[in-house]
Image 1: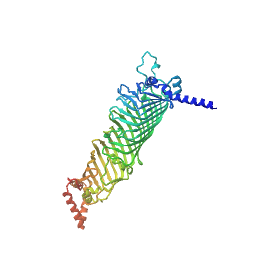
Image 2 (image 1 turned 120 degrees about the horizontal axis):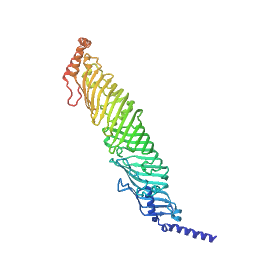
Image 3 (image 1 turned 45 degrees about the vertical axis):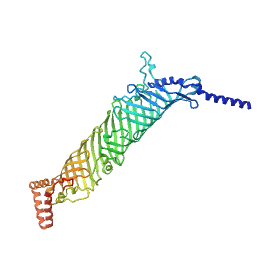
Image 4 (image 1 turned 60 degrees about the vertical axis):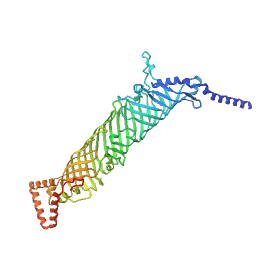
Length: 554
């Protein structure tokens, strides 16, 4: 027994010695030229690795650094550099037969530069393509990339920069990619996760392959996509000049084949801003969508787009095209009946301002618009109408006090509207409302036209047909007035002389109105107090002039 134990002890010592000595007996650097050549042949690029070391217990060969050259048509620098490369090998074949069989590849902290030309070609399109240096006399099979297969491929804690034409560069940080059972000529599962420089997280998982040997960018894939709180401005996906801003989250699916991408899912937009002078919305906007994009033409379509603001719903569809420095839109927005109460929190995002201290309640918004042009210079045309709403803490009648009192209109702290409608044209120069039509329940009808500057300065020329009950009701049938100044504190300037002139014309042309006015004057004989009020009102009309110092005029 002692002899047996002694023999076993000697065997253990010898084996331990072999394990310790093997890394010194086998120099993995003798395989470096072959490994560089095989990887270079597979990628179609020059591959360089640093000093190789063999880790016997883990069965891996590591390189201190790694570099892969870029397509010379794009740059003379590297396409990829990495801190280290780990290659899992079949130790038995390596030791016994000195054959290098790769089981796994792990790239630590790579820095990858992705560049797209003006024509739409990416610098990684030629990865894996047949070697262009092959001699024409050689058989076609000799130019095909080797059937490289790896059980596990990992990229850990990488950084990817994306440069598309002349657009602002974008960057992904902490990039992690995992591929299992990779084979160039078959489909393989993959996972992807990254942080977006500027704010946001992106994850994908799905199936890709087989690798397109003519253009790696054409490799088909299907994946689940999740984007969490992507800051569209700080990440560079949207230019600040467009006025758009917000945090975007996405849950959906992406299918790519032959340079065409189909994406569908749900988007949640928080702190959304839709105009240059807008403020972030306090409520989220949900968007259910289906869109297609053709990477060859840099254009796509939005075939389905349901916009939800609370319970209010609208539809957005159309097409878009990505140019080097701008995005062109051709969209249609249809809102058949969005509840005003659901939209009030969105008004600041649209840079829509109400008179200070006032608020809208109740009613529905009906709108149809076309949205055309570059994203930062949109031309919006269409029509809108608001039905059955109330503007609280704003009395339109009180803004023309003298006319309202003489016309016999009861003043109220609120203004109720049966209808507000107009055609609309909006662009970076401002907003035009050429045919305003308003029916105020207690006040009457208002019509006219006006403009709103990019800084929300109003300039409206209007006529009011007031609901009159006083002795000078004829005067109230056509009251010219203007609205000027900031939307938060608009100035109403009635044309009193114009109103009187219109009233006299009405009396002259309408005997019935003349008779009614005479009867009302006769009735004043029995009421000296009313006679005094009427006389004072008439005198005030001609004494008061339109305000010139910024104060509201009556």
